[in-house]
Length: 280
Image 1 (cartoon, rainbow, N blue to C red):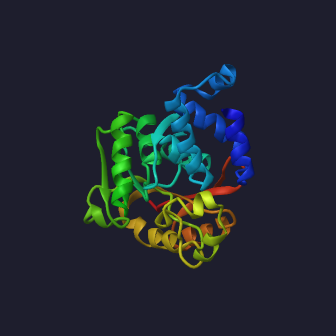
Image 2 (tube, helix red, strand yellow; image 1 turned 60 degrees about the vertical axis):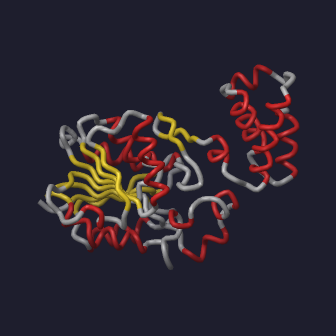
Image 3 (tube, rainbow, N blue to C red; image 1 turned 180 degrees about the vertical axis):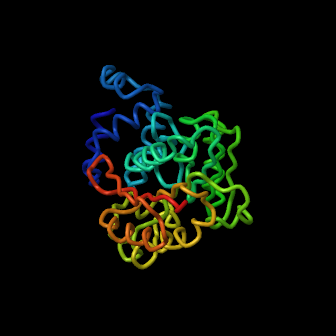
């Protein structure tokens, strides 16, 4: 069945056909990919065949494999994902790494806010890495917030974690207790570039999580305009950005008064996260 699925997906232009075939069969058989490889072409039941074919049909339309499987691994944990949220990328693990580094010395009892939280992968990962943090997370999408809450519950990250629906800082009311760290993975793709994206992304992932306005930096500018009054002196703002946006984003951070502005590279060597400190 793996061979048939691979050939079928290849004919339809799916570049990762063999990997996807392994993962689809593994999903239905409830095995990991290695065991599927070792099992070979064993005889399948009618029910198994039916479920495999249903998933193959969905993948033919380039629906992301993470949606077919209902989960995606991120920072060592399996997060539930579906069409309500962006699929977590390995590149976003850079945001977690930068956040943890910038939090050093403030993480015991520190307060964190994660904007545009989506599946909650950043907020929940930070909480799992630093148990004593108080974490707030916000997303404009009610569906995304539902997924993030499910992930927090499933992964045991509900103590001192609040996930709210709303536009950036709006659900928080007015600044009271300030944050040691604000993270964000905002939509950062220019609207004109969305039609050129791979069909997995363009046709299936939520546009709300992709469209960053005319130049991709609309939300970045909004966050920078509001963030300083929410972050305590010497605290950090860290944001994921798109390829080629680092120089302009650094300039925007500095214009907003942030100090020690840095850009961190992702696993592919692209400057992916810009961070800076508020003045003391």
